[in-house]
Length: 246
Image 1 (cartoon, rainbow, N blue to C red):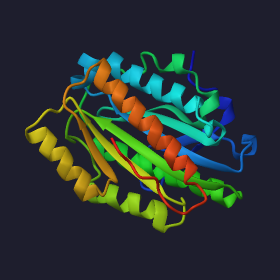
Image 2 (image 1 turned 45 degrees about the horizontal axis):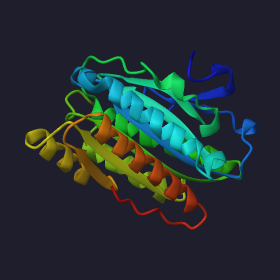
Image 3 (image 1 turned 60 degrees about the vertical axis):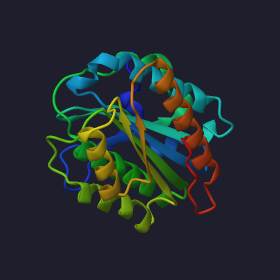
Image 4 (image 1 turned 45 degrees about the vertical axis):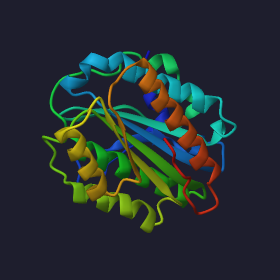
């Protein structure tokens, strides 16, 4: 079964990009405020060894968010990337997400367009947030970018990512925005150092690292992500971001 019904979604383009995004039609939304969540998953060839663990991690995040007291105020967009970007589903209320649909969504292969995927994720979140604000909603956001390697094929740069992260809040598209770069199975060495450098140059709120990808460590990532999403949602209306602790 498809993770979403395309007829319930509107498709939007993003300035300067050939790849846009989709989101639930504004008229179909029932709450007055939303925390917009985007999860971006690397599906380059090197991820194939722990693909099922990553998919289980997303499943756990969705289930935990659906149990949250703030569930009615959460919307999720899921994106995967290798050399190009694929939208698994656009922004939709978390209670309309079906965890079973997140099985086998990663199709591993290709290179790592990490910067391009990050720019799309943040730009789409900001654009949809602006749509909500323009229609009288309140919105904040949180984005998780999960990768096991450095960028090797993007047109964008770390500075481009920094620019869209800054614009998301300074442009008043969102009340606040948290951004988390997650290095999975990178261990120590040049990949770890490269991702830490990217996080700093791009201005991510947090960089966390999981040295070895397995069921236990990725369950820990799921708990961190779901706690962070809930905390950011609680902050909606305060003008502040939640504090993160991995």
